[in-house]
Amino acid sequence: MSTSEAVGTGDSHRRSAVNTRRAELLDRLCELFLAEGFAHFTLDDLAGRLRCSKSTLYTLASSKEQLSVRVVGHYFKCATANIERRVETATDVRLRMRAYLDAASEELRPASRRFIDDMAANSATRATYEANAAAAADRIRSLIKEGLDRGVFREVDAALVGEMVGLTITAIQRGEIGERTGLSDAEAFAALSQFLVGGLSAPPGPGGGTRHAHTTEET
Image 1 (cartoon, rainbow, N blue to C red):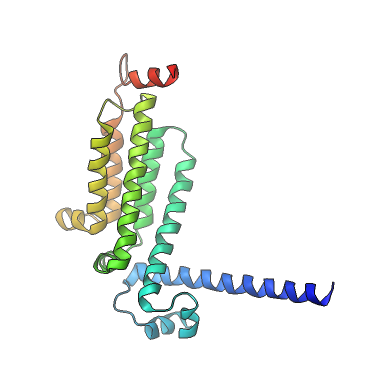
Image 2: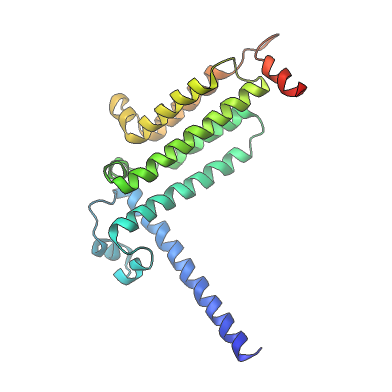
């Protein structure tokens, strides 16, 4: 191996080690934020809790505000990936919808009320929060449309149901459902899953949600 190749390999290993360290820090920050919120922490506090230097935190973001946005974005990115992995294993659209909402419930379970409130109170993290809620509502709408096309969901106005689900998801993530019902966000998602799948499933027997299925096959 030439000197230049050795240097290049060494640089690659160092970059890989740095990236691994940053990923670990993000995961640890995410766990801390989920459990305790983040608005009350200073960078000094976070450095102390993670037993690292402030300069190490600055490799992730240039300010506490930007760090909060990055960690919240990391949380939702990981949660979305975990949810979609669960959905991929289900072949029936009804099972995919249940898997989606049940997985969303599981991903939200570690999130403390303080974390949710801190996200809602900060305009930058709230934007991430609301974008995630909108994406979740769009995903549910697509599953409803697929269920209608396949004839496994009863005849409903997919746009209306999708809008209602979107409003419910937003209300859950804003904490409004929890305040009114006493349910945690995870429990509310689990209840929404049971309500949706049970309420949309087409009844068995002749004519039970078959029109869309025939239309799909003919096209």
